[in-house]
Length: 203
Image: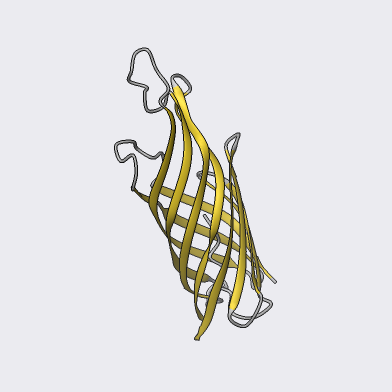
């Protein structure tokens, strides 16, 4: 649930912190020039899961409080997926190379609302160890080692922020689609739908 900042001018700063069905997360986005912004995201899930990403983006104020943004960047993390505490899990590191398109309207008349949508797409590269996860139906269970995978990832998202001029409640609904390019017979664990709540501050 990366924030969709909708930066509209140099010096515009958005800080977002929240929780989703999957993780605690925080994002800082800054308009560094009249056309470009940078964004940093960190997230934490479960006992060991974590993810961080850095992106640079181009933004444009379309007038009438409408903004478009295009970010590109790199993310990395660690995940541990349990099918069941026994027989096993699938765990390891992953990297994401992505581009994200954002569109929305800021400071609408009702509750200073920001509304819009985002579409993120990229290549997910993972290096995961099978600890009796894929082999759970084999008796006795037997680990199948390490899987190096590449997946095409797509994440659409809609959001609404409601509140005051500088602090707003952030409501996000997102989805994830994965298309495996390698080891196609092995399912990649993921949640197809996610819901998040947070606070968004603008300086």
